[in-house]
Image (tube, rainbow over all chains, first blue to last red; front, top):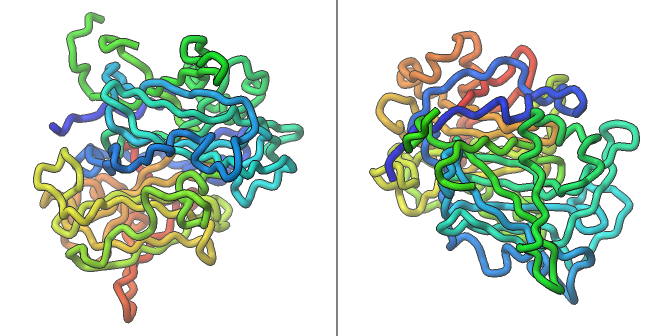
Length: 236
Length: 200
């Protein structure tokens, strides 16, 4: 694989480090300007986790932690493609996901929200994209939950995504939201992404992905940093 | 989306407070496996085995107990385990580690690894670091350099691009222990000692 210079992190698409409406950014986001770094092999390589790093049930969150039945909630399929900015598929790249259960409760020990845990649901999974950059998870729709950022704050339904892409510089952690969620307009984490960019975090409902009698389908495409130079001739 | 379009990057979002059972399940004792842990180098990996230890501080000087630190490094001969590095790394060594700050006393993170070699003869030995946490909407990149590489550090183009007064934030402190050399690398998110973060 040739080493290809990557384009910049597009700060017009990403949230700022300090975003006052999301209170904990005020003491945690770096305040000094980032120092530009000329990419070297250190940034143009990155951890390689291919198909050998996932098992057959890893992408099925309705089964990968089941003890004596199926998890409660609305079964959903979440699928999409991972592409670079030039529209090329990002193949064989690891995606890790985690989410609350259908009642809006995380299994994490710090989560004190008074909603029930589900003995048949952990809420974590992973998969590796195929030759077309496609991935697919089966899970249940995560519930909303309250958090302490401000009075009566509730997170919209979301699934956390962690991706590597081909290099250290393409690393991305993000959250996927659901269309039509009334909490989006009130959520400082969603709103921290610039207008015009944040809409890319909302999945599309798809009747074609939906499986009759089984599960609703959502499409969430993810775009990672691409090459510094557009690899094909595009008239501007 | 088709191949000829120019697409826009998907925005970053915070890792949030509840990443541990998804990303660092083994370390936190959740019933799920992990792709990476604090143990970056198996005992059989050639090179000088070392420990990297640190804490993460917020702008008020308080310890951050819910950060996740990732490291990516070359092997002891400066080779990355990645197809873009044609030299081919030692097969036993992947070079990637992940550690949350919510499990060890005093919110420490630790990595057991080997000291990397110089990647290209130009850069001093270093470890690439990515910092994630609740309250951080986009991840931040930094680097760990080694205090016992003063000569190589003085020639390193990345260190030299950093204002001299801030360079020390990128250089670990060495402490020899009966077991292995220990390098201390604290991360300050803000304040007078704010760690240098890079626009990678």
